[in-house]
Image (cartoon, rainbow, N blue to C red):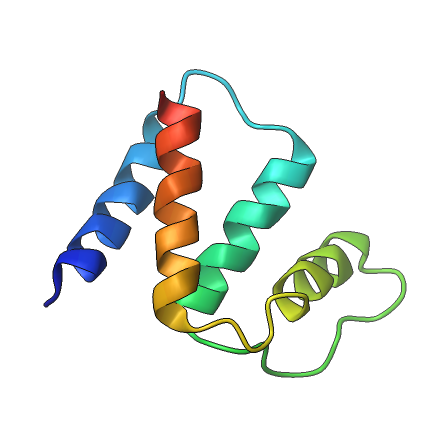
Length: 85
């Protein structure tokens, strides 16, 4: 396992220790960066119109299409570090 993968896993644990929940925009960014870093480009069909949360998550992830897993992992780590302070 690489240092980046270790840091990515540690960031996933650290985000759960926040004393307060981030705003919705930050949560969507975290979700999208996590998915891009862990899975890669968006997969599957976009959720239906009435699945507002699912559609927002899909669209946030879709915006990162083409970003390498390594770049997404580093951006996720950086964002978590900023939030944890």
